Structure formats: structure tokens, C-alpha cells
Length: 265
Image 1: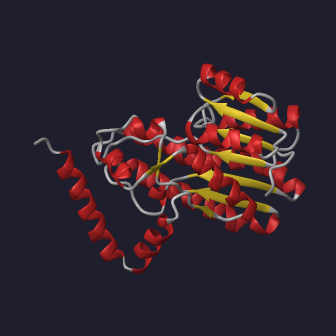
Image 2: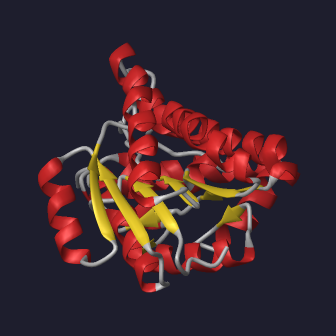
Image 3: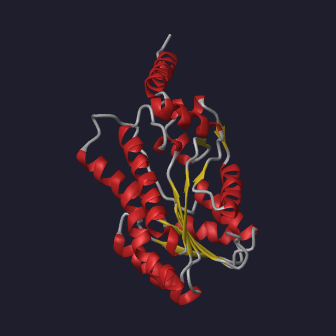
């Protein structure tokens, strides 16, 4: 997909990867980029900073009603949505001790938001015979996330949702991509500094949101399913598939090193 003159929606767009994506899409000539996020002040500040072509929307992506209303509003005010980027996501930094409430919240944000977005936007795309869905998952969705069980599980599920959509609607004009970065310098990562999950990501190398956005622009142009801003993830994924026992042993050693480094003294 070329972004010139396109109407694009990006959720989780007020900061981090979402904001970098919105910025890049406008730079590529998108006609309208909808900056959708939870906090009104952050949405307003981002729209003001991005300038012409950016419009704001406040919503909770865990709400199917909010996503349906967003799609209806955008299509009425700006025309058909060419690209819907389901980008919002959260982590927990927890393992088996994660509460039912934590599991419920992360499942709604990291998985069901992708389902609700597709359900809302696909009817119009299918009627036109074209459309593009981009979901932000994580390298954790292809591999695992040491120190965060709910994040790992839900990101695997997010990849699976994207795969299913690609298989089911690919022959009806719908293109699907799934973004799977490793460590990115965002609030999600920096807010977890000190936790095993964050330290594991930092140990693997951290890139800037703008680098992720550049990889996405290239991936959309090539219409790749997996967009990997950290190219080494493809090799890790291959090793996991071809020799899972060796891969699991390597991950266990990595976890032990991270935990040892975190111990005082």
C-alpha cells in the first residue's frame, strides 16, 4: 500500500509507536490520520503537534461500541477508511500471580480490540473490495516474554487473529500485516524498568519508535504479513520452530542471566 491520499486510523496514537506511525503516515502523504487514544489531553496535544491532516478521537479500544462509533464517525466525516491500525496495547509484568482482573483487562486490550476493530471496519472494506488492516503485536507473540505471562499469551493471540484475518479475507481484497517489534523506547518499556520483563527486552536492544514507523512504511509498501523492525526476530522465530528444545533451553539461560544481574550485590 502507498499512503498518498489515504484515510488512516491509528489506535494508541497519542504517544510511542502509535504517534510515530501517525507522523510517518502524514509524511507519506496520507490525507487524514485519525489519532485515537484513551486520554483526551494527550490526543489533543498530539493532533496539535502533527498539524494538518491529523484529527483526534477519544476511545477505549476494549469497548466494541467505542470502535464501532469511531469507524462510523470517520467514514461519515472523512470517507472510507483505507488503513486501520490496531496498535494500542498494555503489559502486566506478572506471571502466574496475575489476577483475574489483570487477565481480563489485557485480554480485552491486546486481543479483543483487534477483533472489534476488524468487525467494525471490514464490512465497508469488503463492500469496496479493498482495505488494509495492520495490528501491532510483538516479537513476544512469535517467541515469548520472560517475566510477563499475560503479555506473552495475548500477543500470541494477537498474531493468531491477524493470521486468521489474512487467511479468511485475503482473497476478497483485504491485506493484513502484523507488526512484531522487540524492544522500543516507549512508556510501556520505560515504565517497567526494574522488572524482569523490561530488563529482558533492554538486553536484546532497544530502538526508537521512529525506526519502527520506517519499517512499517516499508512493510506496507511491500504488503508483508510480518513486519519485523528487529530483523533478528526472524532468525529467532526460525530457531524456535525448527529446534524448540534448544530454543527453550536458550531462553531459560537468558532468564537466568537477567535474574542474576538483577540480584543485589
